[in-house]
Amino acid sequence: MDGLALVILIIALVALALVGTVTGLVVTRRRTPAPLPDTWTDDLGIPPGAQPGATDVLEPEVLDPEFVEPTAAVLERPEGTASRLVRLRQRLAGSQGGLGRGLLALLSRDRLDEDTWESIEDTLLTADVGVTPTQELVERLRTRLRVDGNEAGDPRTVLREELLTLVDPSMDRRLQVSGADGQPGVVLVVGVNGAGKTTTVGKIARILVAEERSVVLGAADTFRAAAVEQLATWAERVGVEVVRGPEGTDPASVAFEAVKEGVDRGVDTVIIDTAGRLQNKQGLMDELGKVKRVIEKQAPVTEVLLVLDATTGQNGLIQARVFSEVVDVTGIVLTKLDGSAKGGIVVAVQRELGVPVKLVGLGEGADDLAPFDAGAFVDALLG
Image (cartoon, rainbow, N blue to C red):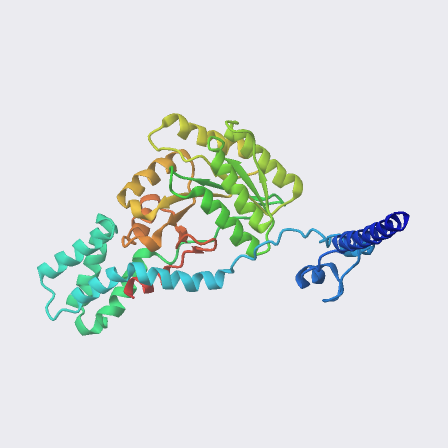
């Protein structure tokens, strides 16, 4: 009996030892880390195939994320004047060519009778050239093509010369963006709602920056927070400063501070964006006059640009007339000229105000504002 008990005890001890061994193996396997995918090890700087054990310690510089030194915002480099003029010709030729082709087709007829001249008049009036300029142009064409005959030249040459005279290349179309005696030039931008004043201010700033001039913008359209933010965005893109105030601030005070900032910093040009005033709202128009008077306590206004939408046609002339009575408009900016077949508005508005079209908007792009060139415009009309 004692021998049997001894055998059972030995068997039990052997079984217990086997169980412990198996258990130990299982625990050990569970503590062995699972293999890492190669992509992870690549990120951690460990060669593919090498597996760190449970006690492996990775170097701190491997675990820390890469530190990237913050960089300053990259400023845009605006387009120069020369390439803008090239695009002016291309865009205008696409939108205004129909007028020139229509006139040339009529003038090239074998017989220029009264019906033909009436059709020429209708074509010019439809293009918003205006009644008086149209009558003058038709009379000169009649004289040269009917009276002078072959001595006048071919119809295309005659038409180009007369259109160029009508657009008047002798007008001074330079932007007055410099002040006297070291003061900054002050440009006041005015117009009705929706004409594109804020965008125009931003685009003019780009033109000046491309010419390496220092600029400060004044956000005097204080009734629309969106206008202030829009102007700030334009400014950030080319690295110029914007002076603004809380929403609803007196526009004249913002304009005053902007010009003061420009004087103190010695910048070349200050451009003031104003609220889009409706020409039939006398109070708002009076306020515009106040803005100009307050600005001139700091420095003279060197340029007053009236922004007009070229697609509004004759309605733009009404706007121009009212604004010219409130402030001394010195130049016209015609926006959306590339989207209108009524390019005659150039002639009509110049006749209405006696001031030149200085800039034209050719599209929605940041650099789609170009100095107006009379020769390029007429060439575009003729296709």
